[in-house]
Amino acid sequence: MSANLNQIATQDRLLQVILAPQITEKATYVADKNQQIAFKVRTDATKPEIKAAVELVFKVEVAAVTVANVKGKVKRAGRVLGRRKDWKKAYVSLKPGQEINFAAGE
Amino acid sequence: MAATVETISNLERRITVSVPLKPIEEEVTQRINRLARTAKLPGFRPGKVPMKLVYQQYGAQVRDEVFSGAVERTFTEAVQENKLRVAGYPNIEPKQSEGGDHFEYVATFEVFPEFEIGDLSKVKIERPVLEVGEADVKKTTDVLLKQRATYEPVKRASKKGDKVNIALRALIDGNEVERTSEQGLDLILGEGGRVAEFDDNLIGNKVGSQKTFDIAYPAEHKPEQLAGKTVTYEVTFNTVEQAKLPELDADFARGLGVEDGDVEKMKAEIKQSLEQEVAKRVRAKVKEQVFQALVENVALELPKAIIEAETNRVMQATQNNLQQRGVDVSTVTLDPAMFEEQAKRNASLRLILSELVNKNSLQANAEQVRAMVDQFAQSFERPEDVVRWYYDDPKRLDEPASLATEENVVNWVLQSAKVSDKKVKFDDLMGNA
Image 1: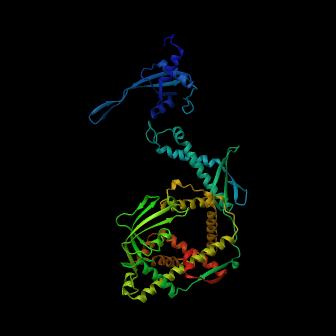
Image 2: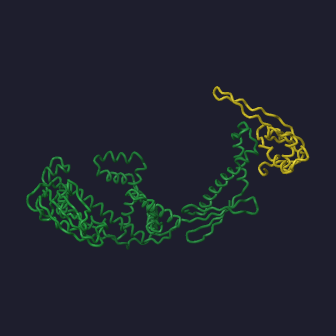
Image 3: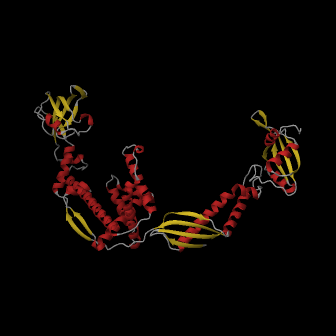
């Protein structure tokens, strides 16, 4: 991130990075095992951005971020092939002792 | 569970119930556990949803259910323990308790009044007595004859009781306000469809004659457009017909459904049905008096909830009645206060009746119900079908059963009340019952 970026513009951008928490069986399994939380994020988000965004929104300290680009599923309606949008998934690991309460936060 | 009862007023009670929280919480967890095994959430296979999420999703709902279930159960228990008869719905409010291992709520409600039925031996009942005589039968046949009258044209001048057909023009200040069509207007003189003067003016005219006369309408006449006006009528007589009453003979009897044309038989039948009608009226009169006496003899304070419910019911019934008679209900505003008196009477009567019935076991038995049904069916062409219809559905028997029960109550009261017989005239009895 370039240092000369306007701070307010940065915050606006950060607030748009996280799309939704990813609440699935797999995500809860990982959360239990590695203190990681999964989010759906914008496809053009970078790891540092995600880290900053999570710290900003949930007021927690982030240890590391790993991301995965998920390919949209191919779906067909009759003879027509269609495709769902690709999306990006981010696993955010928190520093020990940190926690996100989805019910209270956001 | 611990409950304390307070008496607020004669009928109002307040009950404070305290329930231990532990079993309730246990039940909540148990239910959540059960739910978790089948719960479906997106992102999870059925039954694999973590407990925390299930709780988030359904926790509040389950708690609500369990709590209201517990309140209901403990409330009925408390009521039974204290031997209270709750009228209407209780008003339940949770009470914030400090300690935390107990949960408390306060229920306010009304109870059914306790009452004694007063001394009925002082009650005076007048039973109308009436023998159906020849004269009454004759009166009925006269009416029937008149209904079947035929008319035949005559040359003479019209008189009262004749049927005339007239063409008519009505003028007010020279302006036409009414005109009959080509067929003219059929009138029976002396039946008073219009003002009496109108008929008087038509009397004494022959077929083909013409007459012009004025009628000054009084100021309070309805419809208003004629009120206070002088109307000039120009009348042409198309026909003048004389009424001819049919003979009271075999043909007439046959017309009334007596197949062999026996006039005496017809008279007997008329008499029988008149007697039935009289008996019905007499019963109704006695019943009315008995109920009135019961209501007057018992002092009781009614719970507000009951009065309110009854008022609503009466109001609804009135509304339906209006609607059936073709009144636009939305234009009529009914004030509940209008019905309160009646509702109070109804409600207290019902309470008294049910008390009487329970205390003296006056419920109608099967034979009495059957007799009532037979009575209903009597006036139909095929009574056995009607009876079968009633017995097809136990619900349909409610009405005859309750009527029979009422009859029992009436008889029971009559046993102790002073009954005096009073001779009445036929018309008096029929007129206003």
